[in-house]
Amino acid sequence: MASIILKGSGQKMPIVGFGLWKVTKSSCADTVYNAIKHGYRLLDGAGDYGNEKEAGEGVARAIKDGLVKREELFITSKLWNTFHAREHVRQMADYQLKLWGIEYFDLFLIHFPVSLKYVDPGHRYPPEWFGDDGKVYTQNTPIQETWEAMEELHSAGLAKNIGISNFAGGLIIDLMRYARVPPAVLQIEHHPYLTQEHLVRLAQEFGIAITAYSSFGPQSFVELNMDRDAKLLLEHDTVTSIAAEHDKTPAQVLLRWATQRGIAVIPKSNNQKRLEQNLHCIDFNLSPEQIKEISSLNHNLRFNDPADIDVRLSIFA
Ligand SMILES: NC(=O)c1ccc[n+]([C@@H]2O[C@H](COP(=O)([O-])OP(=O)(O)OC[C@H]3O[C@@H](n4cnc5c(N)ncnc54)[C@H](OP(=O)(O)O)[C@@H]3O)[C@@H](O)[C@H]2O)c1
Image (tube, rainbow, N blue to C red; front, side, top):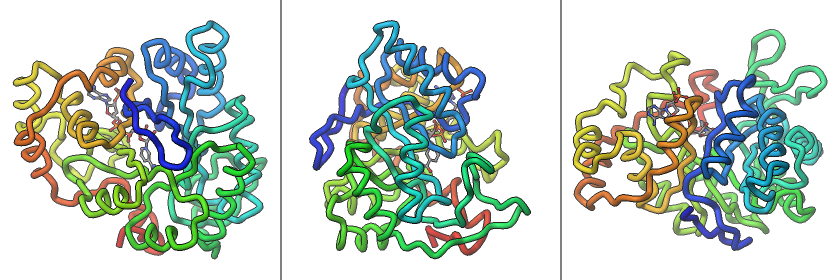
């Protein structure tokens, strides 16, 4: 599997991984096991996905059956918004590692630059965006405090790499002013409707590797009624005609459009065939014209925006 070498640790991050958001809890252990069996080595999880325990069971079974060794896997997880205070970062890293049944994360990300009021995991886990009364409660924890606590996880060996997700340029520039351990990875929504070229260039300038999420654009958001009635990228003429030229699927073309530009991808599928298809997306090359044609679909259309929940969370404004 092709990989990106992460600055700092020098660790190799596979360029194609498996995303765990909305992977059904009841089948998650089997899905993860099968993903590993078919060659995935990177698993992208998060406290918020509510399936870390089950994902860990899949990993444990794959290791027990000799499919893979722990050190051959790259396991990512993320710190949720309610745990940004210094004392909660370590608490949650320990808690999440225990759920996974592993000793360390290969990558631990701040999920959003959004600090919400602490929710005890004993009370509700994952806590999601809202309090018990359905309201959003913000908390005044600056990102610098959270980042310093992330650096402590790194020093303690609980996270081999630390990074950020859903951060925009201004916050990254500021973080780079004080970071003792710079972020190794920036994970962002990235697809042909939202190419974020300046953000990509900024991260590359800082040597921060980029992982794209929701590579298929609206597809992931259809089931949540959050697709903003956008034309499906997987059915877009530009994508389907390029796919036909290469005898590949539209999904493979969308993934290759990112990886060929050095951006890692983490497609999710609850379907075995599609899971396999998504992994095999780097054995062909798009022409520079085809990449340009796909990029020209950009119209800054974002699907995952916390501002839709509460205007005080307008991190992309
Ligand atoms: N950092 C963040 O804030 C953040 C936010 C969102 C996502 N992520 C991460 O990124 C991962 C990927 O993003 P995502 O889950 O939003 O979306 P995605 O991988 O772009 O799309 C998933 C959707 O596409 C379908 N699909 C998968 N493979 C397909 C194929 N080959 N052909 C046709 N349809 C296909 C899936 O349905 P089936 O399951 O039925 O195949 C599902 O509806 C997540 O799982 C998560 O790990 C991170």
